[in-house]
Length: 369
Ligand SMILES: *Cc1c(COP(=O)(O)O)cnc(C)c1O
Image 1 (cartoon, rainbow, N blue to C red):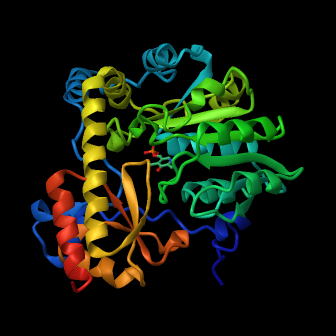
Image 2: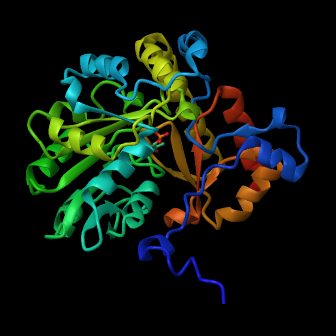
């Protein structure tokens, strides 16, 4: 009898369901024999502008050094991030995407017998990172699709080491305001690490969302996680970061792979950080596209969850699976979110005006209207 290497896996890993990414364009093209150029992908919250031209130039300039290991300390990127956000260099941790940051937190602070608290319909990486290290997930029911911060506080017990909160949350797009965050931070026990996931914070304008960085000086148990994958348009390069106390950053750096952020990613992120014009255009395109999709949904008589991200969850009012299939056949890739406990919803990334229009047309046909 051969050994059962599934049964030999750590119990948390045995029960893991792997992350389901948005379907790649080439995969759909292969499956349905479609022209990849005609496919619209609005499934992974990618920036429809493509990367910043400044980031592309920086990558080109870094190419001749590819034979060398990257700066394992990420000095220049950390220096710029520290300067931008008014923190010490020692408070910055770089990640291979902010996904990496979430895993570093889990590896450093969670273990069997301990738990992490997070909301229902929250980002799928929280349960994966938690279970992968054998810790328990305490999933708190949502309130109006968003985080019920009071219930999350109540769920914290003596074995809780981490609370994951996303503002705005993916895939719901829901958010909480400054007063809610302040009330929450003031009441979380000091020994519980609050991971405030701000993957979409750059899309917020004019104080709509609290800026987690402002609370770092006051709360040594706060970690703010951010990414270059969304508004900065560098998803393929995998670069994100955490801002926290220097002590937490030191701990995360102990479990971090020595060269977790590659040199092209570091160069591109430095350049993208300075391209405020690109960020401004990303934001403006997102605002316009959000309004376009909301108007389209209203016309189709569909409900949606108001969102502060670069995506929106639309309620098809029935099982969204067949509608998703029809969209795929029309060459439009969006994200079904049944796995997030939202079987009647589809999550749609805000695209260009033309991509949004194409999606709305395909949706109209898929609904039989
Ligand atoms: C996209 C996303 C991330 C991480 O993306 P990376 O590409 O790994 O930086 C983290 N949190 C949320 C809520 C996200 O939606």
